[in-house]
Length: 526
Image (cartoon, rainbow, N blue to C red; front, top):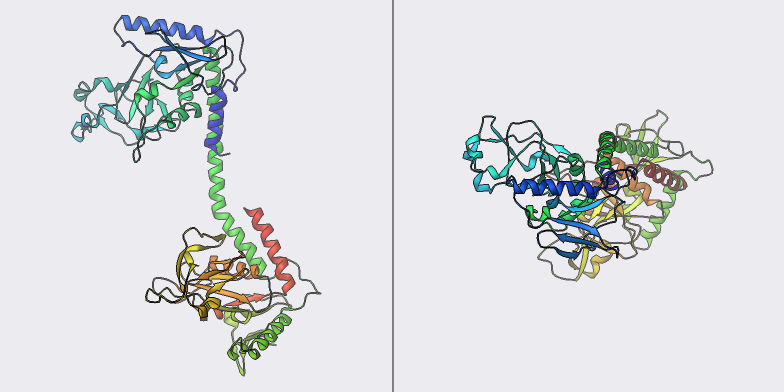
């Protein structure tokens, strides 16, 4: 649960009466609300505020249903479908408009133009950017003149008023601060004033609670500029507890919110740390793995040199059967000489490649090249002029990611019968990006074959091996920048570059143990 979710839960508990225990000796909210109604009627009689034609009281009938009575007309209706939950004894439901003494929205945009602004500190304009999450945001400072305020006096706001955003985040509320001598609303905000009998901070928390905001979000309008209105905001329900409980709730929320903000800061710091540490941790795990230090070597494992001999024997069979070109037998043999240097022998040629070898390996491992281990080729190049063949879906680099394939936007192109075997990936093939994020790889795990575009290399082992071990090698090479290539704009990873990529080869049994351990450690790091 993040900080915002925790704050929402606290506010939800608070307005459901679950945050502090009820005291049966507290004066019921109904008595408090009746005093406020009488105070409101007196102010109307004194012509200090206007009569609210929709003022109402909400009560629970003998049938346990909720009813609303419009005081001006005595009209009564059942509102069970609007009331989200039952309240504790002594609490009451009221509409925001019935609770408030006065309300107003900001002036139309035409009443606050650029020419009305002043650089003098006269009348502060309350804008959407000032209505922060849980408090005033002193940003985007703008003032209008005292003279202009007289033409839009209906939209004047006062310190202590509750200001609510009309635009998204619609419904978010703040208490107008005491920073300035005069305030006026922008067109994106509304204000409500209340009796001093109510605990204003409780109302502020209740308006910011999920219960109130869900009412707002259920009726917002607009596509590009989602908004609510003063009339709608006046109609939404708020739960009102006894005044003593209001004060207790505010005290507890104040304490808890301080903790949630501290928690959120700590959580953000941890997330930021994870963003830096987790890649480094995974990099270290992979480095240990491909250097033969992640799992212990087993003396009974056949050395990797035997695996290379088995691969060569398989290649010879395929050459004799006409399934493989004779050039595939020109394997590079890499060995460490008595002088502790590394050499590569191809046929009769033997060259010193010590400078290309990044680290030493355990005794039963060998350095080799990808082309010695895998048959590989690219998919088909997209050519609008080539319309022969069967239309088939294919993937390109935009579909291939480290954690899987995105197959919701597949396109089709024609493949001739002679191209299908070469350009088709089957279950277990390792697919590697030639361009874009060079070396990005993934194993095709579906039982259904898929066709490939030419920017993807298909690697298929000559004899069964642990393909995921080589996937992790490409992952390590990618994040450490060890994969390079030539090209302008896109750093390509040609078939030749892929073929000659050096890889550390462990015994086949150890490949599986390494992959199992990497998976365990990656899960822990996540």
